[in-house]
Image (tube, rainbow, N blue to C red):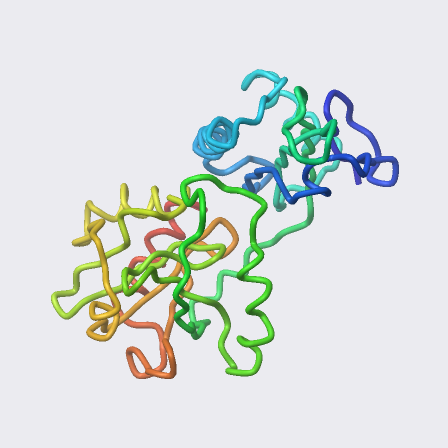
Length: 271
């Protein structure tokens, strides 16, 4: 496998970073992740928009122009010859002179891994709620401390993922956006203090044609009255949620509104 590091495409085995990088010293950096289908990056421009937005919010300089970065990414995809894959762009705080301040030059890394999405509409997951607000919520940073720290708790409870709320205001999952379906069959997703995912964006855009789908401020009380729920992300597309804090939704299987949206989104992405 080949990777892109700063200005060069090199073998994975040759890729190195110095220990003075701020991502190693302080966990400071941002990233984005997209998938390729039949060798074509899906929603590339949206992912690049978010990447450059995250970099700006975190005050990280990007040496490469958008067009140059795109060109190098396609070179890497062509060299690795993985038609179904995940592509990650990581931007670090660079080689900090004191281990605390951002360097004048960030380090940029593009990696690619084999990834084939499992288009099984029968799968579902359970969530547990947790009171936590991500800092710099609108930037896709390297900070997953809370989510990783909670993994043993998830395993003990037999749940699959975490749904954050902030004093009762629903937010998101660590690596996905959250949607619920209420008694009016409206599909609702949290509006503020979240990372607005690329998949979420496209669900809102195409879903509004055939579904009642809205962004709102949602609360734990809305959750208690939900008939269905699902999460969305690049790696999950739309994944039904059938249990939250032990409460079953839609009789423990994907609900009709969620299934209908899943099938439409599948056609939207894969044709």
